[in-house]
Image (cartoon, rainbow, N blue to C red):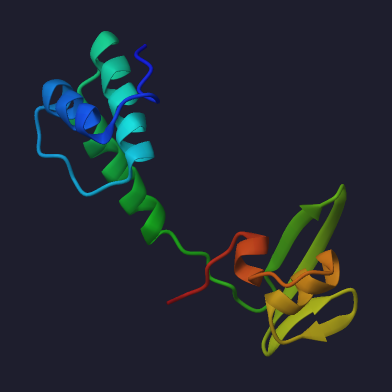
Length: 128
């Protein structure tokens, strides 16, 4: 594998044109290096660039369409520092340790002591 870390931006652009044979997008130097390394590896292992990127694109579309519907009675669990925390979804918020919360963020802060986006902390998205 080639070490691109000592290459100038001009050398990286020339290598991009040689290896990828497409116009270089306006991306940072570090990203150019990562793409070049990946393309070289894919070429060695005979992986189709376009086929791979189409699979990634399809997978990301499927993931982005997936949502979790938080209906009353649903339970959300999250392990944090070896302790499993369970939250129950109720009609007007959430119930955690027999206390009612308006948001998952409040529960996440109670658990961690720090401000969190509650949906990120618990790994859920609700209906858009």
